[in-house]
Length: 353
Ligand code: SF4
Image 1 (tube, rainbow, N blue to C red):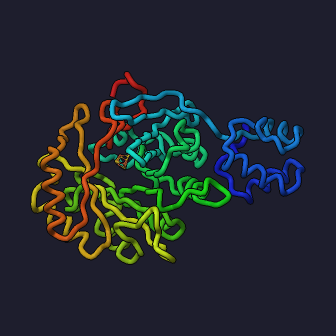
Image 2 (image 1 turned 120 degrees about the vertical axis):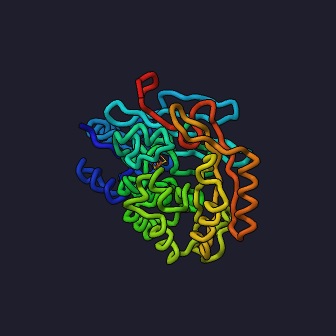
Image 3 (image 1 turned 90 degrees about the horizontal axis):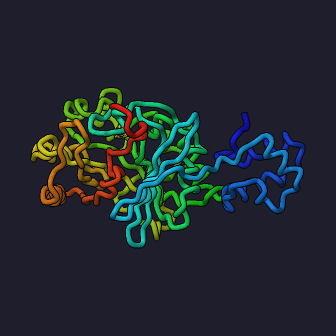
């Protein structure tokens, strides 16, 4: 089987060229073609000898694969289906919004976390994506030149696949890689502690915690990950780190290493929208420099979960703000193509669930 080059570091590329009996500088050229010029075929490497291109094609693959399907929402959101290993597919969602264009990428096919309100959770776990498959969603996106932000909020729990996610983040943000500012990248987690602590140590990207329920018992009932990773422990760990709620993507403060910390809170009618739920959020997050993103929910088939009204979302935002929390309401996009939060699902359509 041919090895995939995408996702390799300069050192690993040096080993590749050495193995093919080529001088070291070819590794630098390879990284440039791979990550900066973003080629789809070895033939495009015009400053590399024909012999080397043939050797590379014989033993390696670039790891670039175009999407195999797409659905376009009436609001402009586009959901792409990218190929993954073993005939699997994975979804990525492109969300244009005035001068911003965000891509929501997946880190796994399916997910083990089993959040009861999430289609991906219902799908169950199928496979970890490799760094190459994560990166491919970004640089093989037809609109990738327009992208301003990347969020790891698609299918899967990023810190249940930490090695590959960290490798993808390294390639994304390194000067020799895609040279993205970490301030434009956000990784979202339910709070898988080991991976989260490594992410905090090794990356400067923004962090989003999927909170959704602030009472531990409620959270455990709807999000099984609460048991191994209690939200109280996650928040305690974050208290010792340098975060802020409004790190400026355009003008990062001189010398500041701060990155944005946010808590995602999907509003479920009757389940997490009462005053005592909101007061618990306030107590839990007191003293943390963070924001709370309130997210509308859209019902999924055969599910008891219901979304709260737009008026209630605004009311709750105002309530949290009055208690000293910085809260925003996130627009829901791509609902008509099952691209909105909680709706991603790559089990083959038509298959019985
Ligand atoms: S909400 Fe996220 S962590 Fe929970 S099951 Fe869905 S994809 Fe996994």
